[in-house]
Length: 361
Ligand SMILES: Nc1ncnc2c1ncn2[C@@H]1O[C@H](COP(=O)(O)OP(=O)(O)O)[C@@H](O)[C@H]1O
Ligand SMILES: CC(=O)OP(=O)(O)O
Ligand SMILES: [Mg+2]
Image 1 (cartoon, helix red, strand yellow):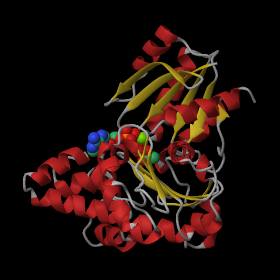
Image 2 (cartoon, rainbow, N blue to C red; image 1 turned 180 degrees about the vertical axis):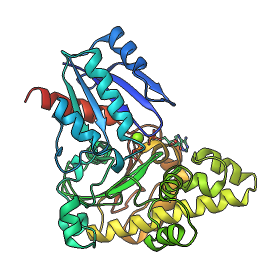
Image 3 (cartoon, protein in one colour; image 1 turned 180 degrees about the horizontal axis):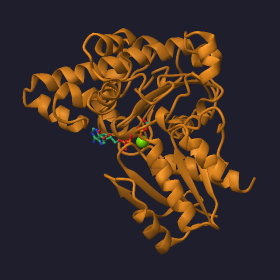
Image 4 (cartoon, rainbow, N blue to C red; image 1 turned 30 degrees about the horizontal axis):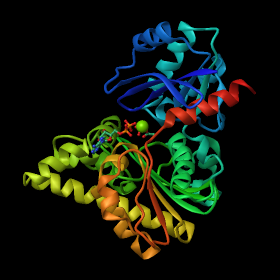
């Protein structure tokens, strides 16, 4: 079965046609404004037996890969406010594929599925329980397709059995989250009700004091819609550096003596260390540390900073292997009790696997 995987991120579009695990064709648009034309062109040229879509939010109802019908599409659309940077774009791709090729099944593969079994202690906000129940307020968690693939691939790379032991998976891309995984099941994660919670990201603030939000709205008169737009699109590395949210640009500016860029990187790094420590405490120690996503794959200093901070838990990176890592790599220092791996993010492989399983029933 040839599966076209459609991965609409917050800024990019990745189309990959897979036959088994082999890539038959692919197209990566760094910037995509949501139109259907690239998908139409790709399908006209290559065809597919099934189409798998990454959808960020599955809400309470979609907790596993599901063949899309009108009802599923409407339900996913009702979650738009819970992932405003992502959901409309994924739905654009889904609607386009279904109208271009109505006879080919479209399967939705949700980022939240990996976290659907989070224990209540991790998924529950300390809000009035009536609100939690009435409005399904809970921590859903995201990047599940990536975490799910990375923890298994990481274990394989360092020679550990799959889905066993305590694993910290760090997906560091434009969006970023960590997942604390015990015996293949997610025990805790840094993103929550929306993909805004947790780590400092390219343009997202990550967690901020709820009191600060009240202060800006009630005392400073910032309009709520403007505030949330700023927190999502003009904060994080972009907000602090004043220029770009791309870590490459921030590091270049920092090396040229830009003080704001230096602060941006320090805050970014501290956020990683703070949450990594929290995740390791939840797991009660660590057997495997995995880095994935654009930054996780390509920034040795970021991996080194997290590794150093977790030395108390037994993490030690081999400096040469860390610097030289390209694609999938074991970067563990000789003799370290905790293994560390770099895994190329392959959401496409996970989407294709889930899509095949859903279509074959
Ligand atoms: N070599 C690199 N060094 C630092 N950051 C990088 C590098 N390559 C990619 N990135 C960062 O990773 C981001 C893209 O990562 P990716 O996982 O593809 O993101 P997403 O799917 O979240 O859009 C870019 O926005 C950029 O900030
Ligand atoms: C969930 C999320 O933040 O996704 P991305 O990293 O692709 O923006
Ligand atoms: Mg991504």
